[in-house]
Length: 538
Image (cartoon, rainbow, N blue to C red; front, side, top):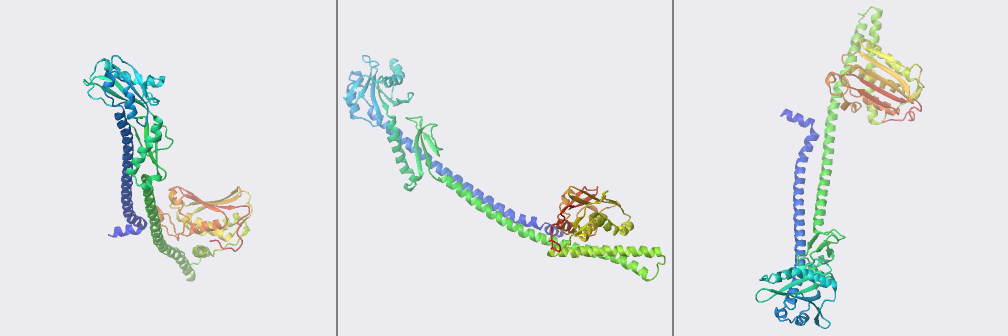
């Protein structure tokens, strides 16, 4: 139970996110499933409606031509067997069919074998062919039937046949058989394609539309008849004609939004709103949990800060008290020892002052009241004076420090000397704490390309790449190895970063775990800091 509470305490944000994300993801998944099913069924219903509509229109076209041809071409066999082909004119006249361009008869009777006559409505009479194209189309269509007649093949049923090999002369044929089921001739018609496109197809589409769609949807529907592959639009549905004009297709589309598109748009709108609401909700919860997590973390960091600062304060105070008591009680008689104890007390006092200054400066930075006084100064001299304040502490701790200055003095820089000294002191203090078993620290000052760079190098435990971007955050302390046993306020590097930024400079760290760290402060040589003296820098 304690482990669970500890986990939730340290992973509050993730626990809260999971607690909200799981039911929210389930809800979105269910809504997606419902909306997808609605879209699918709407699309199926829409497609079925379009398919049925085109099926009915195609059936209407077929019905018109099949019924009309059956009636007009149903000639008695006696017209052929009794050599009375001229009587066909009277029957064609009585059964005249709109949509037929020419009627004709073709005889397979012995005396009139192969004779072709076209009906001329203006006379009316049956006349020999006058058009070479029409007669050629009829001869080609009649050829298979002529072979059947020569073989004296029996034809039990005389059904209509369509020949569309010549697209300019589409023919409907009806074989005429006698009482013994022998083919005695052909009655046929050449179809008027223009009449089909202008009258029959539009009429069939209108009749089917009235049966399948409500009247208010008419303006939104667009129907067409076109040859396969020549449509300029992307049709929603199309159906080829089967009995006649088999190379033509009936097509249907909507001018605006069809039910499929409406279902898709509705699906996208609902899912978009749901996702947006989920994102806003997640953002709000994340922000709230993150704030709570940060507050908890900040509370823990402040607790650690108080504990660490207490330790940092007690250490120099204890040393000062011990050496002060020794001096007060007169137990140290040698002048050299008195001087040594005095130096130690001074060093610890400076250390204590630095710690108090860090705390006060952090408070000023947090409140936006921290100010800097910029003056021209010798940066090399500032660094050297800072190191001299560390000599006693470093000597008693066994540290050796190497200072490398440029061969020629650098131009003066416009800085707050006390603040820069504090920044360098914090870097040195950091190097001492995290040097591990190493007792070597290097300090260098170089100039070039308009910058002066102060570097502090240690041979200590180093910092991982993931931690390097966080070391300048307040209260942050690297969580690796020796660091857990190293006390500190967690403010030093944060204050360094603020000081350097106020000087329009930059601070960087280069480090590898186990190989030490190099902290570098870069300050502009020309122009210095652009801030006015005494102005606060938050």
